[in-house]
Amino acid sequence: MCPVNLLLSIVGVIGVSASGPLMAWIAAPALAIAFWRNAFGTAVLLPTALTSSRRVELRALDRRALAGTVFAGLMLAGHFATWVSSLKLTSVASATALQALQVAFVVLIDRLRGHPVHKAVVVGLVVSSSGVLVVSGVDLTLSTRALVGDLLAVAGGVFAAAYVVTGGTMRQTLSTTAYTTLCYSTCALVLLACCLIGRQPITGFDATTWLGLLAVTVSSQLLGHTIFNHLLAVVSPTVVSLVMLLEVPGAALLASVFLGQAPPVGVYAGLALILSGLVIVVLRQPSQHAEVPVD
Image (tube, rainbow, N blue to C red; front, side, top):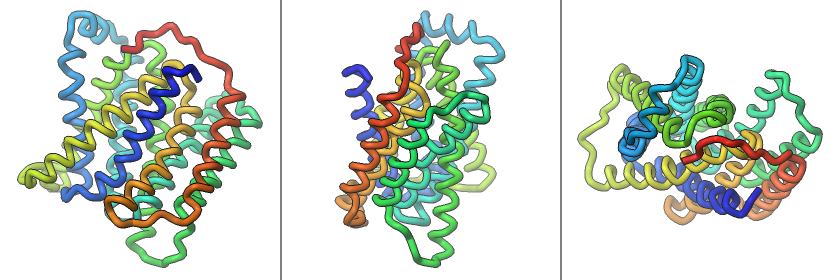
């Protein structure tokens, strides 16, 4: 991974690491949080997407590109609907760790699509996943609430895997701006419909809640998801998903500082395992030099 992409990956990890703690702290319904971060993200990107060069790109979209991007938006909506809900039911560390195992589903999807999976990828996946379990710990409680939260987090990981794999395909022909604007706007519309159907309030929040919504948009949506969508043009979905595993210790540490949810004692050992697995996979990945628009 080149220095620029490495730096972007670090910024992206920091951004998504703030996602869990922030959304667990924000005093608003889960679907409302998910809706607003995508709506705000779309509003920020839209002016750039409507410039002359981007308008030309958007108008030139064929049915396949449009359908793929809309599908990615639907998967992103499914991810947020399940994962943000899980943060309200179980610990940030557990919810983040379980959804971060999306990398396993990314590898499975690739295998089902007929793509060969190198043995080193499997080894790296096992090592990194072990680190995730070490960071999150093993929850031996029988709380129905926590169990539902854990299951929702796993579902969030499945949706996230489909979103990342689809994004990897779409980004080979679409610029970051065009893809993310269409994807986030689709996601926001779907989540808005879910809020209206479920009669979840999307307004009437206090100033602190609105500040929290803006913070999660800037850190996690724009400096997190958008950066990783940018990287999907030159880095495989498997590597991107493995990098995102670093969100687990990051979120655990932030939750400890701001929410008082102390991380397990093995957080640093888990971080070492995640990094080791990531190194194994990255070293065995062929470099990608895609000639695609990335702005």
